[in-house]
Image (cartoon, rainbow, N blue to C red; front, side):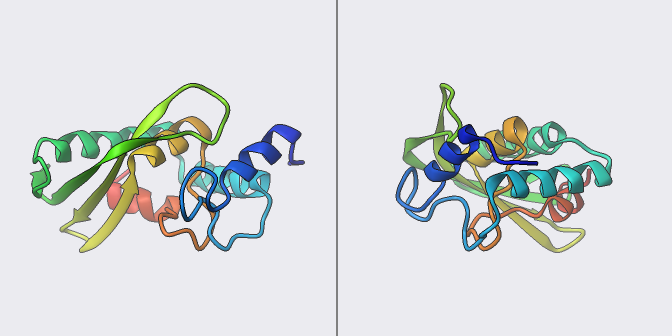
Length: 151
């Protein structure tokens, strides 16, 4: 997929310091279009959708928020904790919407595996199929997310 001028602008907003201190691309040197395409292909191979992954993440986010910063047990073998900070972040794509600054920590006790995400990431995955670049502190590998989320 060739990168459009619009994706060039989105990619520029993802660089460190534009929206967040560390940005969203990490050490990844691939163009945004290639990052999106490779993750999209992986998700298709897994037989799921970006929306399904994001919906499951949103479910755990909502469950964790009930704990007011403490760990909550969900479905008998998950532990989830949500840490909220004041403020909001905009999506790097050009549309309206601000997303609360929060970190979600999920542990699948049966697998003894953890997955961490931010409030904005649920939107980025569900609406844009973006899991962040390689080397980003919050990069989510789609296949690992599906395993831990049990999709």
